[in-house]
Image 1 (tube, rainbow, N blue to C red):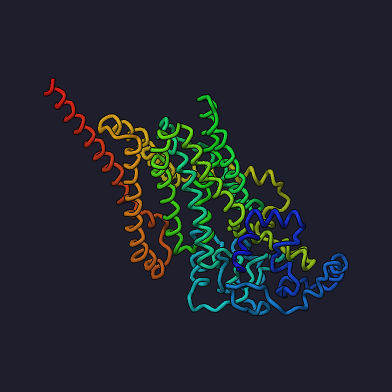
Image 2: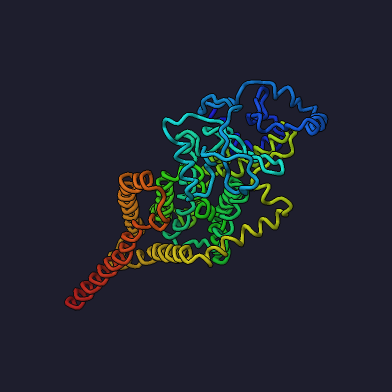
Length: 497
């Protein structure tokens, strides 16, 4: 029950209720009576403390500090927060650190860095006891807000497996629906939705701590759901094409941010599993789209496919609104630092992001966030190549929605519904690929990382080298079978003549 309350609290619905009621409902541990503040976050300077206590007397901070209970969580063991392990944090200059040790590094370190691996191994060791984490104090007296303990359940990496699975399931379901929308109309006019620049816009926005993952998700998915209604009702081709473009644009966060959410949830060792399921949802959506509408559009009318898209999107949007928790670690810590400042009266509590962007306007931060990914894509040859290859693969994949109609409808004489069944072969391919990839992870990659440590990131692309042969081989088989069929058909017609 506590986990469900936490999910609703962190979902857009809970955050709106908190905002409307000025945090009277869905309170965080720091806002509950009896919460014990770790001593490292309490200002030690007596003169400063006196002035701050006067300014915040109405908060009764002194009374709260004397309490000895810890935050009530179902998944976290009781830990003495007053005896934390000191540790370093990435992003803080060495000269600004008060202490260093080999204790666990923050689990939201760079996604594929050695420190991230060290943090994952420390935080997720089955026999590792929970320890308090001492916040880093800089030379100028600032305190960096961090997770309270190595098992702090505010950290998405420490969520229960059920909560992680639920969040990942919602993202995969969302991805499936949006991608199904890209091909669900194929049964009517063979139109395919294009995503355009959406991912380049919404992916960077989710990295802004003030926004997090949920704001881009919920706002764009709301627009996506709303726009499916006029798309089903529009009565001219120009309007239909424009609305389809908007659907693709506002549906793109699933492509842009889904992988980032999986990274938030799962450790470096196990994130490939989450990414594989998310990618499978992205491929299964377009594959099942024609089947979902293949029989109904001819039984009813061409608008039926868009009505089906609305019926799928609306319930999932409600699940997002009520039950999708925020997963961006920097966003979670940003809100925590604000609560700690209000609770302790200590204005020196900040996150590393706040320190880095102090004095920078939000508009400037937003602009830099939008430009940086484009710059990286252009200047990093490896990333540029991967993007080009991915674009080629998606282009080939979506070309099937045109070619299959030509082959199976015109040559083999399939009905539209029967042709849609052919796309189920893609689902079979996904299952086969995931089986092989999961075996590779389970029996080679993860044991190799545990034994040898992180190799260069290109090492993870070894399976892709072998898989890359599948695309041209598949195209050759499909093209050759089509050529053979056309030749046989032409010869039969000639003999008959």
